[in-house]
Image (cartoon, rainbow, N blue to C red; front, side, top):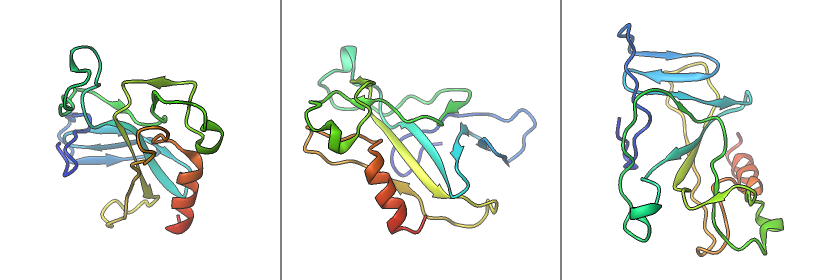
Length: 151
């Protein structure tokens, strides 16, 4: 299921033909199923790739749309941090223990709601840092965003 952002979530065919399901850990539709995290205030879909990893033959080339996959995508953990200078890591708090070139991922947050038909805002955090510092999992930025949005 391609989105307006140009990436695809894990594609999943429900064998019973149900249009959707929603429980404590899974969000599924006819075409995809994603494992998520929830703290009771918001739901997080973490580490969703938006492009093929820029490694091997794709290194230093333009990005390519992520190839859809079959099955379930586990979106319950923060993705790795892009390789960077760790001089300022004490301030930006990226996960410097888990750095890799395979770091083209998005994290999405939505307010927690049992009403699956109600429209909700989402947060897609794209960090700055002038290609020197930053990560999609900077804790101080996420806390500030949630506070500003009343989440």
